[in-house]
Image 1: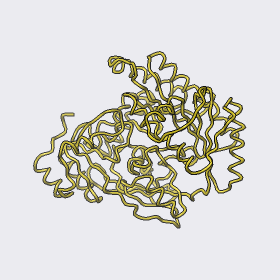
Image 2: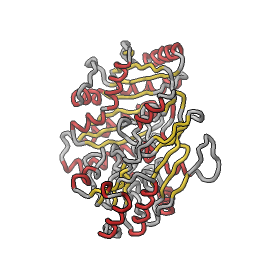
Image 3: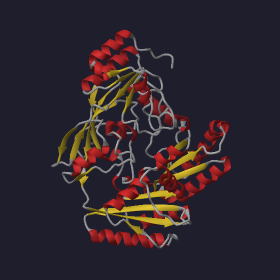
Image 4: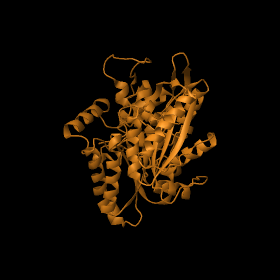
Length: 468
């Protein structure tokens, strides 16, 4: 976008003075590293990478960028899957990695105040020491940042019982594009005071403001969890079983779907991934229940098994007998995306529908794949209808990949919306999905969102090129 300015030598000096020379990096290797995330093979390096460590530094960066019309891209752990943290117009890449402190665990009110660079799993482990629970757990929880989770409204396997990131964010400290610092809410469980700026910022993909502090709700840590793995000869039967489990009055803490190809990829390409499956198995459900009463959990599992048996599952259900077996099953589920990436050029779509429509979505995705000649690896959070569709290039020509595949993806998204769903459940729109925004939204709705962006960021300097 030609109306952005390049960073002048004078501005380089001002930025260096602001964050310190050691926190301003311009070498090619660093810029290329911070110009990518986990979205396909894209790379958009910034002109300069800054690593602020205080809210005042973030505010100063935004003021200088706004005054000089320089684009700024907030960068988290670079685990995103929609290109949301790519510096597509160069400018300033602002890594939040040094703002990585858990500031206060409030045990009495069951809240925690954190900086955006805190790794999600580290937060979970620290609060667990005090008998508390932070439930959102994306597949990348061992490396992703809380700030990125907030930007994308991340979910994960346990969202179906406990909710996604938005359900845990009470208040945010945010630096606006002009450098002003605001609080979006209050550190209270209820707040009906004015517009809900907190929830507007959650999921806004770093386009409206830069989160520098977050107050998050916590829950009591469940004492027990039980995990089973159920096999099916039909992927559609596996999907159909999902809604039936909830209709039987049971809410699992996690309910994950994996098709056979997804598991085969993981076993083949990920070291230490091991699982035995019968030859006729085409899909698996990984089902977890948690709580404080073991008898109740065993009763719930028995009811679940009775339900899935009606959907023609293999009668030999695997019970994870100890923590090591649980970890192995979760290890396989969480590493599927990495395995697909290791195998082939791919595109990942993040569809979500009402869970009872999951069989229709899966059947439709496979039919569209047959029509356009691609193989798809499907897995995801079946309990909340969130199906990740990894499209493998395989034997497709470059011409088919570049020209025909976008048409196929549009058909997948149109199908998803026709089933009452939408085109992203937890990965966001970012850079790669914005051309499909006309499918779930009318022109009026898109213009309303663009108007909100303009109120926050009149010069369009903060994470430009994303969503719209």
